[in-house]
Amino acid sequence: MLNRRSFISVGSALAALLPMLAGAGRAHAKSGKLPVEYDPRGAVGRLERLPLLDLESRQDFMAGVTAFSTTGELAQAARAHGEAIIKAKGLDPTKELPVETATALFESDPVIAMRDRVWFSAHNYEHDILDGHFKGHAERYLAVLEAADRAGPGRLELNPDLPIPQYARHEIHQQPGGYVGNPFAGHIYHYATNMFYRGGNDQDERHLGYAAACPVPQDGGVKRILDLGTGIGQLAVAMKERFPPAEVTGLDVAAPMLRYAHMRAVDLDRDVIFTQRLAEDTRYPDGHFDIVISYILFHEVPADTSRAIIAEVHRILRPGGVFYPMDFNLSASATAFRRYGEWKDHRWNNERWRLEHATVDFDAEMRKVGFTVEDRSDKTAIFGKITGVKAA
Amino acid sequence: MADSNAPRPTYTVEFIPSATRNAVFLGNPTLDGMMHAILAIGAEVWADKRRLKIIESLMTAKREVNFDSIESYLPTPEQEKAWAAERDLMIKNAFGPFIAPIIPSGS
Image (cartoon, rainbow over all chains, first blue to last red; front, side, top):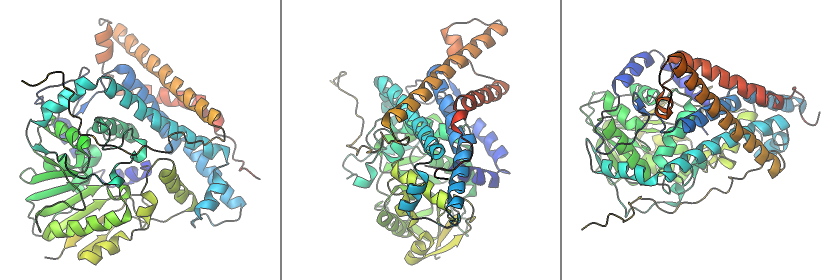
């Protein structure tokens, strides 16, 4: 589960850039270049409106419920209850608690339990209505995808023979079919995460901000960029918009996500290569890329895979190249209630590798393979800011 | 000749279903189910309210009111803001009682 505060802190840090980026986002609207299209309610800028008013309204309601249970009154009440429980037990609220202790303390509290129930229901309901809609009109949406598969700009490279690892087959954060098992994984991911962002990323504002914040190699050379774990390609497209002459590649293990990413890039007239490969075994030549970037990839893979990916990134970066992985801030201060929230994300939201990710000393792993690491993570922020540079 | 009735490729593979879809938070799966039902019904109520607002907007602007005009209506930024505030108030009024006074359990 992504904590909304993390995005607020990132967003505020980029606030000076957002007006310019938002303007750029509005200018980069749909191009009408898809060979087959289905958007009966049109689009607002680069975002197609959900095709039925009632579907959009239900999502809107659940966006409100999600806000109520993550930052609003219900979330605040749950936090207050958690802190009161800790205080009543004479415990230090700034210290982590063993999972067994935390669950025994917090799970039986009615407000904390209700907060969890409300959030969980909104989350699953949102996924279910989207899944139901896209599957209910499968032929139509598959026709659009199929036509886009062969269209440009850019290209889509799928590998039906790629062995899909077990770790990638889970229904991460309860998304129906996960990323690999649902032909509409990309559609569902896009609209479900839009609900999470509550309108703050409808025009890819967040991803444009992350692209703007990405460091560049000291010599300024940016010919090839790789977005690892690209998902639906929002960051890859944003990097292309920041570096138009560069060859930008979005890599992912999940074909349904890549198809949606490519379809969307064609629709936005952005020349991006989307390729189905493993992040830990990309098969690219040594020193191939100038920048490797990733967004919320590492907390969704096992720790050993993270280490393998870090090593692979070092191999495929050229000397002086930059690695900019964005994910949960592992150096942030832990509190008992916060750690309990992370455990819940792992236990109930099917974020399988969330807790394992917290055990990875990311900076050390990057240094181990040869990166020079700069960690500018704010200790209070949920989201980190780490940059790795390969020795020149 | 290609078979036009052949199913379209989906490029999906077998996935591992979540084991926690039916998680129980309220101590009783029926209670959890009821809470989920209340939220789902709230979504339907809000969908109807939003549709009514659009109809009223079209009528106020003396525009034609039909399925297409309702479905395609794009709220103004002012309407988006006002409707979101109304939605949030509706949620707070409906679910506010669950925000109990700050009395921790066991004390």
